[in-house]
Length: 362
Length: 182
Image (cartoon, rainbow over all chains, first blue to last red; front, side, top):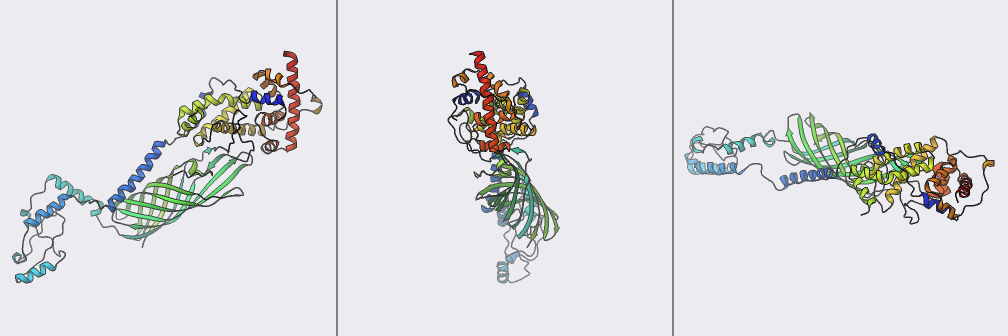
């Protein structure tokens, strides 16, 4: 500007302040809608918990942490020492002992009056017992209280119930996630201007001043492998759709759509297997890449990777032997990837999700 | 760490004390901005209240980008609220008839320097809404006529014309003040 008097006015008025009303803050606090702010420590705790679940599950499977305890093995040794019967001595099947002693499988054979050498050969060839183990009740020391507790615990473990069908499963699901559609505002691109009392963009562009984020939807196909009675590993392909209304400073409101494709990797830990129902917890991560984005009529050139963690609790109902319907509420956490495009994931990294799906056993 | 950076960091963490500090640090200035644009204090207070409410609802998503970025962001949000109000009130096209314009001499910068802030604010508030808005946006807030035209949905020529009229009116007012006080 070539008019000094206007420069003076500008310098005088740029930082001009008015006196605030006495009850200004109280009115503002009362009008502010209550919202639950997820503290950072809670977000981090959720991430650590998810990683812990994965770690414990992985450790359990890969390091083969035994569910049975040494008491079981010790009793096996004790009974073996005491029950030293050569085939020649066995003339009839001993009465079966009470089930409380041990679950170990004994090599036993019903040997009729055979020559000792033939009987020994038969005995040596038999790999597994056809008849119940032969145990003289009186030869075993009585189980201590602690041992009995362990044995009872083993009996009640899900593993000891009806064996879970192993093998592969494929599934398909629909997933909705999000938080409230709260208006959020993102800063524009500001250029430092040393002549003014504040910084602002002198070449004002149509910048984003707010966004209304809608629920995100995803659908996908998954493949899972039941590793044992408790653990299953799941992966697949998931498509996600993110929708927002973006408020621009000059051009107003524009609808924004983002499309992602991702590969999840999850570990399911089954807590309960029933004849019809199953309960499990799941935890894992997903790696996604942006496919396409559009804001109004403008194509957004996206090329970003998105990492996320998720965890949940699932309930599955067996409709048929080969088909189950499941519902799985849970949480997702999306790591910041530096993207400048506002979306539900940048505004609310931690969000609730609800997943419904079908699983088919192959 | 500067005060602005500290406030921005604590706002992101959801610190409610930081929200109050934000209000105490910047609300007076934002009220001044509102008063510059609308002219009367009651309306300015309402607009500042609405603007700050919007700021509080979204401040935890603000990403600090250097000294002054928080203040600039606050200004953008508030200005948007002000302009939406003016558009709703259809005040942006209000002008004065041509024969009320005074062809005045341009005030000296020294004269303007002596005018108290409150007095200068009163002079700007007395301008018709259309002239006042363009004057604020061009002279004080640093927008170009092209930007003003886009934001107010008017022609660029209209913005330039309204600025000329605003300057003439203000110059006349300042010269009158100089004659009465200096």
